[in-house]
Length: 137
Length: 392
Image (cartoon, rainbow over all chains, first blue to last red; front, side, top):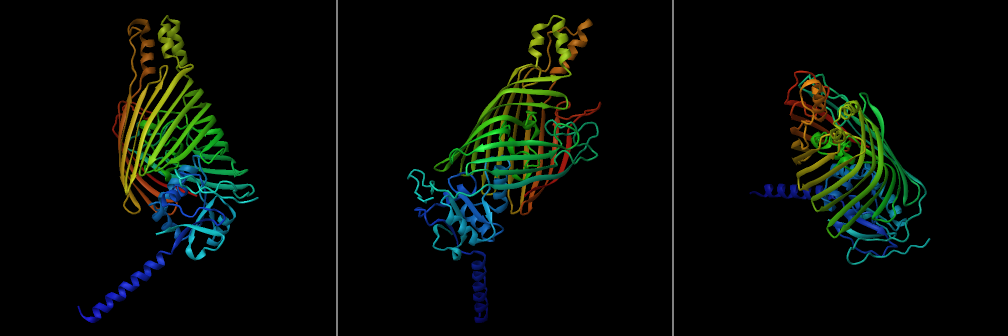
């Protein structure tokens, strides 16, 4: 392989990694800073966000690009599957779907204000009012 | 209000910061679901219907078989008490589209694991009874009638308790109810009393096992009542008592399994329905397999219904003046099995929208579960359905 070829390959590789970084923002799961909970497992978070556990009140950003990343990494489900699971729970009157808020900033605000709330946001949106309990891989 | 959060015990390390939820005011949730569908059957001598629908699909095409729209609102009065009402427009017990109220209850989430509901509730007879109208929540276009048409009653007015808890990796959901219901079907008035039941499902990773049981006492008033009275009047009092559908014990039991492992789907149920009186006891079973390929889920299913009680009676001699009565009794006891092989594909083409195409090859014994059967009808019948499901 000549030099130019190698260069092209490297360029491609760099572009691919940049692409991957854009698609996968660092996403973290947060609870109120007033909670002493320091870590949670993906299993526990998944149980809350799929309606199997009512131990906390899930909050999320509506129409956010981090949503599919969160559900696929934490629960192993795509968005249609998650919606199907919730439509089963909601329309049988058994549970209320995660509360949707327009922005990550509002998710932070809602989680900070409610000791039972849990949210997932971009790492960059974390402030001192919330505590990170899980980093989405 | 002070916040004092605490970490949950070591056994179940779910983060519980239980003491001080945010005291928000009254909130309101609204949502809905629906299916727009059209179905055809390759016969014009009978109609393929769901449940107790009085008309169904034949060769002219039918939008009433699978189409439905439901809306639901919940008012959260306090952090634990809420009121929910669901309205649903579909073809149910009459020919046109009618507005039902499948849910209308007050709920008190007593603890994180336990809630009590009072009001109009969906009858949890089979594994997906409560969500069977929500096409988006299901793989197939409609649950197999071989199982789901065994119960003509969808809802109950009463009280239930719902329990859910995770024991390590196993999620348990259980419920128990008590209530009554009166419904007017196309050909009968059904009154069920002392209806009670319990169900439990356990989910471990991709596998869910479900068991449910419903018992009660029903009285069914139909055009057959004078015939039963005549049987008694001519001296066959024991037979008349056997046929009577007044205050009879009914029992439904259902065992279900579902598996969602990687992209592989498996779902099946085996159920039994026992009615006192002339209504046939039946057993219904189905199995569905599917495989998710990106946005497409092709699937296949097989369903079978068997009649497990006698469909003829020889008490009245089939000769002389009593012949019409004897034939009448046999007509009353008549019930038919059916089996169906189905193929379909679900396409999740948009967020909150899916489209499905399903072809059923329905093989009835005699008329099977077909309705409005005309002379000369015989199976098997192919039913094709094209639907779009949505949630909002």
